[in-house]
Length: 195
Image 1 (tube, one colour):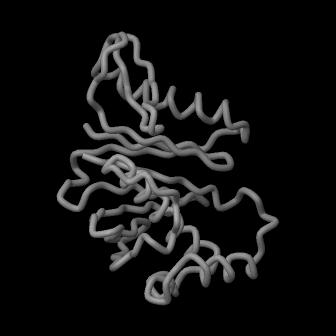
Image 2: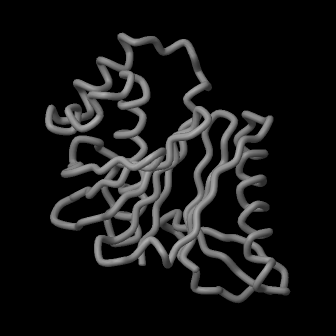
């Protein structure tokens, strides 16, 4: 398993106008990808593509990728839209990932998994918070996931990261062997995890 997630608060940092997102679109996304989000406003479409690629990058790190994030090396091949959910396939140097992106309430939340995995084996959530402080966001997202895990695990839930920055979940100091991913941006925190 290799879950990654990314969240974008569309209402945060309003100083970036339409011109910024048009430039981002032309720099970071292939024409074929731009066409996939042509029916969205420029900012929303750009952030959908960015979020999918960022989540796929986090998944790729768990598959052994040690490269820095270069958006145009992640190729979004197809997308399907149903209600507030966009589904896509992403390829990065031959590795394939499935993605689900929820667009709701000014939030774009993307989750990617390996193409052969099934989304029914994962849970994910995003929530708005009042703080823009990085440390408070980090604590809040970890507390949210610990609360989710507390329904099944009665021990003390903590988190650590390995040397590659991949998060681990521990119960009473022992690894739960859960594949997890954290994300926060603006006034939103998010996580994804295998069940």
